[in-house]
Image 1 (tube, helix red, strand yellow):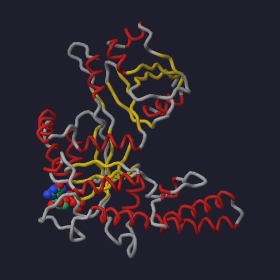
Image 2 (cartoon, protein in one colour; image 1 turned 90 degrees about the vertical axis):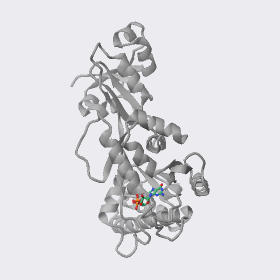
Image 3 (cartoon, protein in one colour; image 1 turned 180 degrees about the horizontal axis):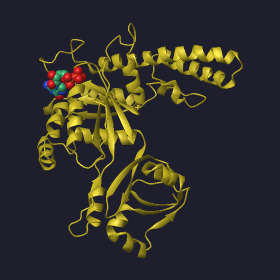
Image 4 (spheres, protein in one colour; image 1 turned 45 degrees about the vertical axis):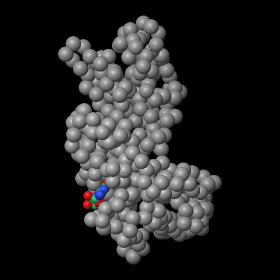
Length: 364
Ligand code: GDP
């Protein structure tokens, strides 16, 4: 699944947001629980298509359970000014952030005299620069070490090491200008084992006071301008409100949001933007037993998607029965959909689309 790492200066609202995430996750029924680390929280991806399909496959009293897909949020503590120097960023910090697919960078956009700001005043741009500089420095340090190893290997006529050393030098030049690695263009794709942080897409999370959700305050405007220059997305939330929402039953939460004048909770927006930023889509498996959503990358083919369900299904993939979810709702079930000719047979080269319902035929 998708993992989003939460970073930001101290006292910007990260823990408040993270607590809301874990509470929301604990309340959401019907997703496969696994033991997860204490710094990981799960938010289900809201998807109205699933409830429509659950109604389709309801037989009398038997309502098929809905199993939504989810996004993991990882609370990444330990980022302060100067963190990358001196002691260096902790190993735990680096391990956590390297596992994340994207970074949610929480920025303080609320005024509150009772909440101390580490730099003495609310200044979102300065805060963003402070964090981004630490991340760039962490990459610089890590990549310089890697480069010297690669150069040693390259002397021994290791062609791959030579190529990687060249690439590392190109990236270091970008980092050296104080830019994130993602800002550069390179001769080759950056290998995962480089372990870079600043290749990951960033979503700026502007944390505002609860009375500032409808109209952007001046701080939010600044964050939006900054993000636009980087081509990054912004999600405006109130971490405190998210905490309150996480405690409410669904209908109460909806009424509360309406009162506040917003359409969607901040967490739901964050999940959606995370999906868009990473080019993710959802496909569905659906029947009387359950209605379940699965996350894949846009462009994945049917066998890879089948592999999300189980590796056996990818290995033994023969073909798939595919139908768009709206067509299934209209047909009212597999049998009728088939008799109408709406269920297509797709082979190994089929590129999955968002909202496809798939039934995998396999020999495993
Ligand atoms: P962290 O250090 O980034 O994890 O920040 P916390 O989540 O611990 O928040 C620091 C303080 O700011 C806490 O006292 C929170 O209650 C408070 N806080 C967080 N978000 C808001 C907000 O939107 N408005 C106000 N007034 N206070 C907030």
